[in-house]
Length: 621
Image (cartoon, rainbow, N blue to C red; front, top):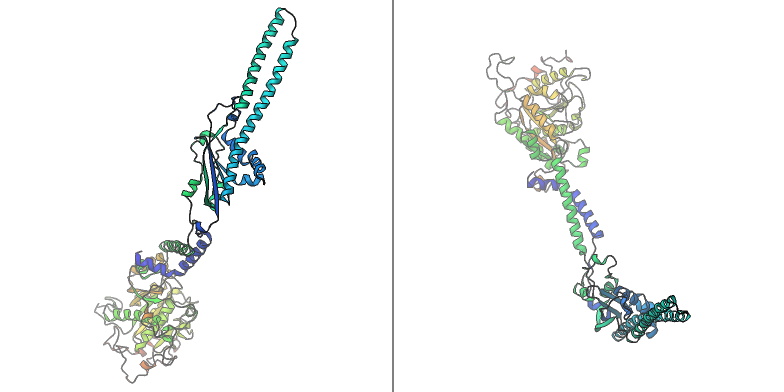
């Protein structure tokens, strides 16, 4: 399909695309988050005060610096949940939990630094709390250090007293006693030295942390502070796997602070969702159209049949499909009637162009000399289709009406004896072997060529149909054959020898491409005189509504509804207009044979019996 076909396909399924676009817009409106602008000037201000400490280089477990055994992470734990908040609360008053919630600690293991953030609503009070946190942190560490040193001193003093008592208890001057006293003297000397070291450490122990910098309180926003407090910057797994982890600081947050929450404007969400749904639906429609085996457009019909489409009949409304009216009579100014007039013009053009085959070929029966025989008067047009319910009967009834508009005599023969429906459109009774008047002036109807088709063989029925066509050529201007589908029965193929033109009807959205190809192959095998196809229910037909903007498709004729062609039939001139019965068609200039020879009367108002092949009517015998 080219671009124009794509557009036509999308136009044909515009309702599906519209529904998909609406659903996409609704889903996008519900799912896609909407942005929320954050104006820092309108946010609550929170004051932050900071202190940064750097750890002193010392050897762990050194008796001279007991605080070295505390890691930076242990110090952070003491600030947030340990004894530091309790010491701050004792000093400033308040709840230790409130102070613990106001502090945030950032530890950098590579630089061995510890940074304390304290938040508050008042800058002076915040600075005071930060200073107290720093002082109490050092005091807490010193307290742990002194506690450990004092405990170690007491333990060492007790051990020294025990050694001295044991030394005093050793008596005798033998070698064993002397050796024991010497061993105890060495242990006593070591304990005394250890005790002096502990006492020296208690009096001159240094702080494990050194204040590196402190910053006066500065304002920040509540969301920024909340983000900082929620951050987890302490590596809790293997240190080797977290050495490159960057801790989150206030500087990082300030540099990357968003001013707007991510999302789309509601209108953009609706537009994007609608476009997305429409695109998905369009892709699905085009994919299904490419895989659809049915005929929809004129181009597809011509490609499937291999011959041109000579008429495109727009799709009937739902109410019109339920009715059995001949719309060319009930609404003669509608675009539907004009489409059937286009089909009539194609038939008349082929008829007047002299391209109709000779009904009596050379050397055939009745023409042993092979001389050229002049065409008889009537033009026989077969209306058929590949399958059932594709619009043959509707096309035959409307074509008969538009052919009779110029005064031509039209005979419609029902050749689909298995499913006869043509009488419902023409408003005639289903009487076999009779030429029946219809509600359309100039159109007569043959409902059946045998008394009972159920008792006759198909070959007998088809022979009788050919005999009727042969007998009626001299009486009528056009004979329309509403036949059975080509691919379901052989009836249409058997009537081809007496047919001058074949019009194949296909319905858009129903006729299969494969069926159209098989029907065309069958017609080609029989050398059928096909003039083209009529595409009914065509949604892509050229819109005649733009020209007939003043008339509705359902508007009835201005004249008498029972006889919309009364002006043509009852005109003062006895001469049929536009080359009608006497001068029109392929029999132009040829005097018709007397109808009485075939048992048909030229008086249209008189009901006469059908002729048989030999010209005798068994009912009249």
